[in-house]
Length: 334
Image (cartoon, rainbow, N blue to C red; front, side, top):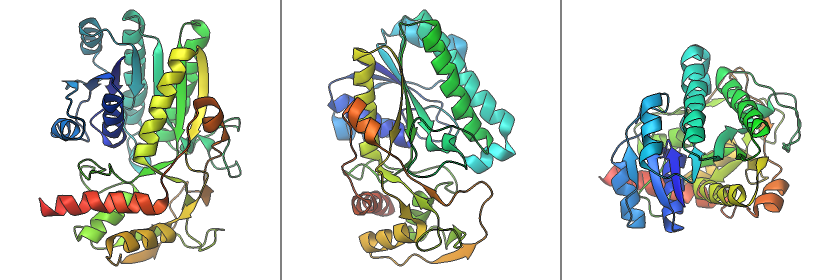
């Protein structure tokens, strides 16, 4: 199949593109490069020996999106493109709503006109909010505490409404937990522009010596060591989950909401210890105040992913830290 991957030059997008190409699919990427680099195309080619078609465009650009669908017979879309930093979304709500929601509306309109009605959407475990008990199941009520989360909730609703309006649509809403690690080759990984918003790349930069110290936000949660517990998933496992979701859209119509996680929680300090073991580098850290909106524990019930998609995570936290450090260490040598 020919798959359009929006945001395909980013962390999760680029790993999914590699899995698609190695699975025999043709890939078209659209990305505005606001948090990625055109050099990722060379990296994808180095891993897969194939080069996807690339458009440097913004998905909010209606004319550009219509042109992409006119020039390519797209069979399905995997939609990653979106701003994703919780704290930044609180400071910049209009930018987040405009980018994430308007972009998806333009994309879906272009899909409809182009005769493409299969989409796998990048949602988030943040939609489970503050009041559910772990593990989080897909049938639990949703709520949000920040504009980023609201964009995911709203887009889940929009895509469900679209599928109700037209039964030809096939929609999978994938609720990610916490993707970390890197491709085992060490060629691609998470390398955000500026200071990282996420824990794992921040730890990696402290280990590399480019940041001085890790801030741990709170050590008084009701968890085994007092620090926040999250469900970390290897980015390659996550990418493979998208291919399973794509298979579902070919065989089915309607909507499925599916968690992608490991069903296991790891605390901040446990992750730091695992990274120290993988890298052989001591990670200096300091305890600071909790961040507003953070919850004590967040991990997935993944029974539905196994039952509906035939997918289960294969990698453990040691694998994630090993591959993430391999990517960071290779970057240090360049």
